[in-house]
Length: 465
Image (cartoon, rainbow, N blue to C red; front, top):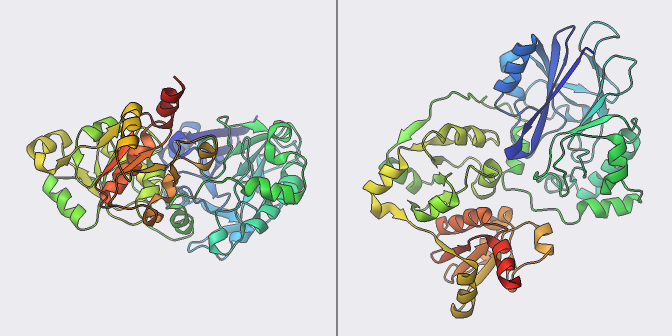
């Protein structure tokens, strides 16, 4: 078989990209690439292939794509769906429904056929992969149109001129008239998996078939278009703060990213000056280490979780950033921030442990409550504000009595809902997101802020014991 198809899965963003090549001709394409492109270049070298096209299934909102980086490095042509024509600052090939890219010189070469599948976005496409011109479809790369267990949310563009109802109706047609018309044996390769904010019910599986999705995907069950619209728009989480920025940036001619660019080591005095000038001090250590000691005014988003996405929920796009990290982890943090387009990293704090020991006056600890501690506090602390920062699906399954629901992605936009003069306790499921939320509030001037160690899980264990 001449077809070479490799999925590249980036777990921290639940993002799947694809390297598709023809082993006979040596020509290849990359679909929906991440911004740091070294893995695709390495794969091309390993298999003796040349990347001729970069195909984007749509203007992504959850990450900054690597099409410009790949085009710069390889000379590849950038391809979008026809509805993207005239909407980019850089040259693209806008392809219509049914047009084909042939990765070779004849009918026995790998064929990629474009399907226009609007709904998640107006310009969304899917790509049918065939081993040869006359072969049955082997795979369909569905972008954000069809996921495993879900479909793309149609509401992300509603704020910029495309209402969710219209997009949802287009999505229904794309699914039923285009994708479900493919043979049941066709592999489904989506652009995202579980954890992505581009859907609400994504599976942990990263590949399926049309037949399996026809049988098991709630959004593909027989229903009217009106019922479909309600099903796919209800209960969606608030879009992270950076999504509009990323979607807009993916249409722009911008500076390309260099994975090896220098990263300055800053003294603690340098960091203080940058913070006072408006930079975000982003502490990427574990939440327990952060609680034991951190630079005042810093925000904790641990590298061990969905770092870039959550950083993009509490830091403004374009804001200068100083990284605090375990030694040797600074570059990883910089690269992961670059994947969502946060390029304004000034540098990193040099040797945090030594810096903290030498400047104890600049170090703060964080208040964290065990579930029993919180049970006592809620009875004894007057005016306490309790905030649940989990997603809507989690909140619907239960919360702590008296909690106000403010999703983490909405926190900086709903600060007026909280009184900074009263104590605040925040919680999530286990403690990772609540440390982000609590540190964000402290960085915004809230003085008395705590979070619950172990979150809602610890609370339910306490009250049901």
